[in-house]
Length: 180
Image (cartoon, rainbow, N blue to C red):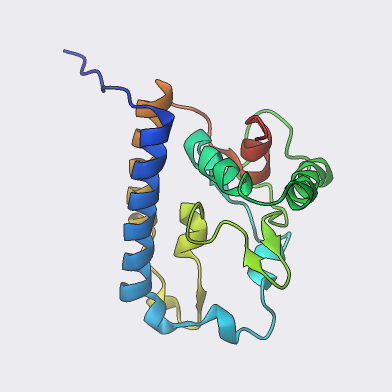
């Protein structure tokens, strides 16, 4: 017997995604980030987000929708600047190619110097929530925790859009959705 999952609206899915991410961020912060250096104390703020040899965050369509929703709240001129940066990132790092992209790295276009992560707290991707400046390997969250969260996000994504969608590099996933 094949079990069908009941679909949900994107609006409802975004609410559930925010709740899941808040719970996940709280868990990471309480259980693991006690062993990490606080971002506010970093000598090179944003270095991890802007390192084009390090960042390779892939997200679901639902996560991209959450990011688009957050970006829609910014002033038009600022949002256009971010959209342009997203387009330039895709072009510069060859992220428009179809197929395997898990080894592609890029600078995150959602990091704004002087502000930080533009989607922190509201639409931050799971991999970014997991990341912190850990000084000892044993302080890192186990990979299984992030994998479990990604499975929950994928399940919510599937319930929303009716099928499994390809996880795409963050800039491309955002670009593929209509701009608000």
